[in-house]
Image (cartoon, rainbow, N blue to C red; front, side, top):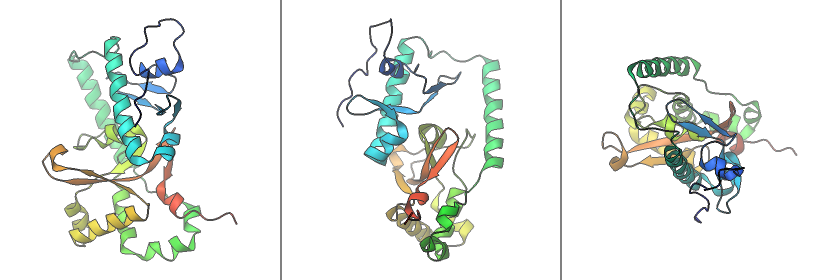
Length: 245
């Protein structure tokens, strides 16, 4: 991908451009938290234009989208550190306690608020209703979708909240053996279902190699769609969209 210009901090202090504000994490699209983390709704494209993340995803695809989200967020974080907006000092005990409580509360909200949407425009498609719903991979799809991470959790070894949800992606990652045991099917069958769902463009598969996982094992992250401003769009809506004709 073309190297993006103006990634370094601008020396201009007066009237910074929108792009300068973006690289400093001060753009209107950036939501900042007390622990130094932030969520951006925008990305800078290869031509240097500031565009919506969903537009970037649609234009450049999942792999480039994920790579650029990580790369640009890293640059912004470093720039904010240079500006003194993020410090590496340890938080005091009361702040840690509050953060722990907030994480516990968000975990409870996530567990009680998990949902699997039923899209009527998808259900109206005979190919979905009379075909996909009758297949074993549909059951695997629904079960894996039940574990999409939408909030901070005490048990999130793959950091799905930070690496996916905060970047606008709806993702779950459940060990194959766990899915197989719950669905009472073989592990190879679960793997085959996930591969088929990916081929059908109903999900996106992202492999976490053992060298990058928390326990040295290989895992597969299933991405079901994207979200923005509280609204979710699932890939299955595109796959089984009913024609207007």
